[in-house]
Image (cartoon, rainbow, N blue to C red):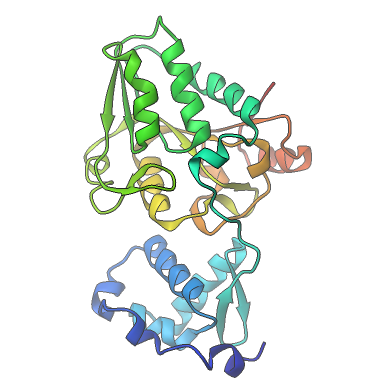
Length: 284
């Protein structure tokens, strides 16, 4: 696709965004790349000079950001700019995802819950695998004095029967019906004031070079904050997510402490993850 052909139907970037270049220039690099990614995925083609002007950075910085996004597999680089990467996954509703890898998710959830000790503070993420972890925490009747934070309404309801053995704190925010999750604004406000022992994080993709990724951007922002404040970062992913790269990058695999997955995960990808220093626990 030529640069002219790719961009001939696109509106000027400055008209598509309301925030000024000064505000954009104050963003952290990871936040700036997220916003670049969102802009690219909304349009057929975005030029480097448009991005540098809009985000208040140099052309060199904009190209560097695009190189990072391309290396993660999140965009396609073409001459003069970038375009969306084809073939990204579709986000499935919570209820539909319950039927996929159901037995494997239960085993992953049990393995994750076994890592929690009395007196711990834990974040349990949204999603069906995190729900399995919540169910397994409730089943551990000997567990006491654990504080569990979550931005998932389904997760919170699953944990409710274990009160007061478990204290359940629901993060605020705007409700996303597709996953029954709470997102920005407000979802990270409480998280920014805390430090917790463990996060049990869900995701949509785990890839040796592409890292930990998620399909939707609103939840990704909350997940990144969860990762920032947790001393121990544990990712829960069934075999169908191993080897995939999705839209929103959460972190490199080197930054997580453990991946818990199932036997259906591609053995070659599991080995590649281990080569990058990631502990991979395969449940049966």
